[in-house]
Amino acid sequence: MFRLWARTFKDNHMLQDTTIVNDKVDTRTHKVFQALDEVCLQFDLGKPIWLDKTIREFKHHRKARFTQDNFIESIEFDYLEIQVIEED
Image 1 (cartoon, rainbow, N blue to C red):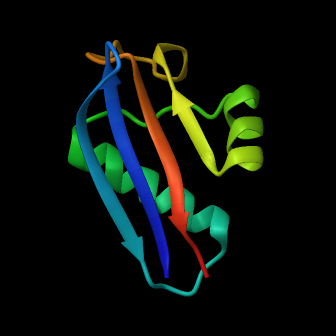
Image 2: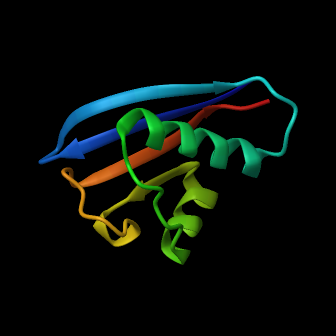
């Protein structure tokens, strides 16, 4: 089972969160991208851009923060944080 936790923060306060579960047989990368797509649908966001810094952070910590630099449109929060909390 694969689970990804996503949260938005503004001024160090969590605004919203969700957990995406994926039981399909697929690669970890595909599961992460599919989960992020689902998060963006639930939070009504455009898809963020994976910058080199974001990729490095995700590879090392299983966690990544998407700030205004990662989005084309302006966002109403300081950052979106995703974290893999369980994987096969």
